Image 1 (spheres, one colour):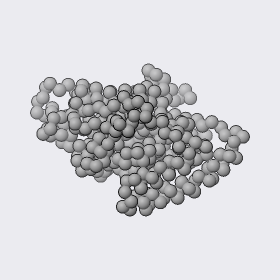
Image 2 (cartoon, one colour):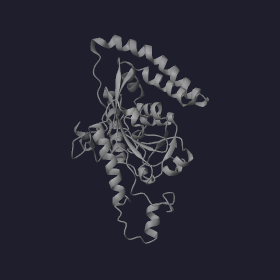
Image 3 (tube, one colour):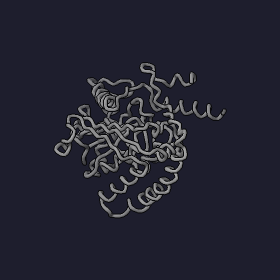
Image 4 (cartoon, helix red, strand yellow):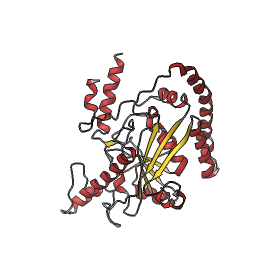
Length: 332
């Protein structure tokens, strides 16, 4: 594994791109095969029914959420350990405003296809894809959000992809929350990657909720693209799984441009430079100090909630890791 040492974070030694090894089935293998064989056709039926039929029917949000919970329950995801910052256990019903709600932004960790499925079952949000090269986001469907957990990292959006800033997306969908995966790619849940700048387009009045999701067992994370079969086996062959969900207190984008500014659709940073605003200090990633503090605050919140550390490896390093991983496995 020495050839992969450069894909460990220099400060912490964390390797966020390595797959989490599964415990061997041992004498329980026949039982695991039985569970897998029993659950697979049920899951295929539910997933096909929802994405091909039910999501297009006027069954209402509650009906769709019920089917999504059936999909989550089929592989044995029965226990959800939910905790919200500043809210005592059992008092959540009286503190609903501390949860994401329509008109807010969810900044979620990204480790598994189950991330999008769980968030959809709870909050019924809109999903977006973020890219390191732009502040804009690409609106995507729930199905696309699930599939993106199986694909490799992308530094640039696909040609012709519709891109929009967060305020415009929220204005067009006032009754929905918006999910952003600011790390832009999946990890094994052992570290938080540097963020894309898409959260910086949120307006100063929009609440941003950092949400961390962790899984037991952790082998249902998908840091390696294309691991469909391994994920399905780990998901369906185990008797049960649990999700640890932590929601931080909301934060606001105090670094956002004031109302009436040109906004990010016309490249906010370039417009500031062109108008000769000398009081704005930009780093080498085109961010002001205030914008960097906002991303640091959200990143620290996700790291604290997930009991992990932030790492310096990002999308570009994962692309290099995948190239090395493919070359290594091609020789075997």
